[in-house]
Length: 374
Image (cartoon, rainbow, N blue to C red; front, side):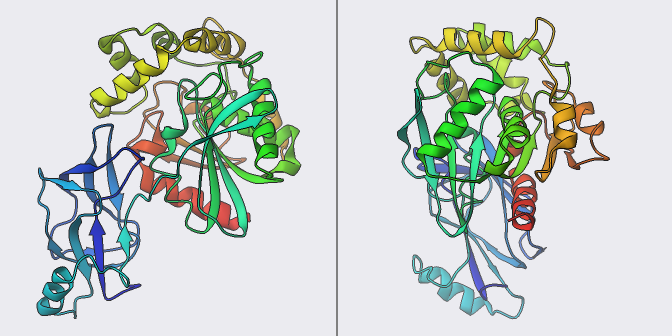
């Protein structure tokens, strides 16, 4: 272990989170932990997720039982080596909040978002971390925003700088999306990189954002250190238009709940707060028009415009694909067709949002991949 005694604390996922609910401990008190083991399920007002433990040890003491609420930073449990005495653990708990020599399992503090002028666009962007390693750039999918990465950006920013942006027409960015095509949106991403003085970055893109990342790897390889495509678009014509059309037309809680539920393997993870946040975005002047223009530029009446498969196979940029086995938006078969040519991982218990549904596994895959292609 990194330390003889370690604290497991309530994570902070996003700027507005002040507390969370412990819904289930996946490890029993007294059980031995291995690095990356999923430890405890946490539910916030926006979404539920699992906290994974980054090291090894024994779960010696559980202080917050399942069903209880706890403030961000609260001590949930203590992990220690087997030879550590109960008296030492008691003393450790009594000395809280002195955590100078502990490993804190935490989602990390989100930095403040800011508007960056990138060419003709005003893009909302959040930056975290620092360090000399090549930065990370997160690109969300259709209808999403930078908060899609709340479980990933903090965890992957410990040794490098990272940036997550709202694409034109999304989130808090300007709704002047231009033509709205993947190519036009990729130009906006390059403009954002220029504004941030990023000559090169590791790109992590989801769905439409994955198509943007793959296109940049093919057309601007000097700017791309690696690509992680999470259920990326553009690799085949198949697409569930029910989500696209449903998200654009949703104007009440029920219709938005139905649309967002298609994204996940388990629709029940969609919370009321998630629905309300999506509806607030949709009610902004110009939001529906921007989404409609982007949909018209990238999708056909029956599916999506494709053509990236050939570019991807010939690309020299290191690329991996991650797909949820139960994806109901873009079929996992798109990944199967490229499995022999690219590093490909299928996440069993996930749908179209593996980075949210299986964050610990996806973070491990991304971290290992970018470290290998620094």
